[in-house]
Image 1 (cartoon, helix red, strand yellow):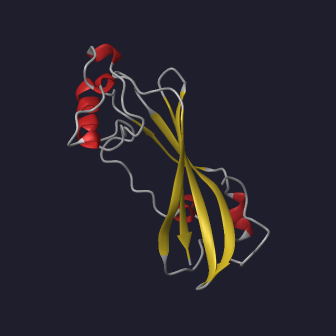
Image 2 (cartoon, helix red, strand yellow):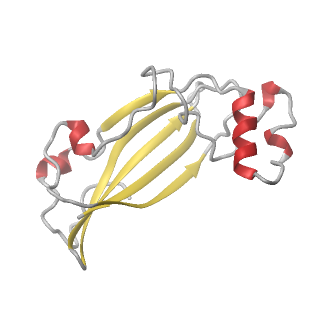
Length: 169
């Protein structure tokens, strides 16, 4: 769900200033080079108690492929240095007034995969405000906010488009 706020059921939660920010970048991250041991450990954790499929552990380090859900940002990140940033409400990051709501819930996610991650890859992530959708719910007006997180590797290949939606009311 990318784009501007839905006009089908406007609830007044999305302001003109918020609409103008759709598509704007929220942050950038760059991973350290992915180590073969990172891939193997991730695969063992994901497939436990079963043994992971062979491509995730039984290959030379130089050609080891990570499972699709591998996250090179789960630990420290190279840029900006240190622990991964916690993404707050996008309006706070963008320096604008957000909706005055009390509740925030996870609303779901979609993922599109591209080139696989190999050992040695350096992954860049750019998170942006994907869009808003407004709906009326049993508890009143609800705001659905989508954040898009696009990953590419050091060769500029598309790796992943992860979009997550949260609901505020």
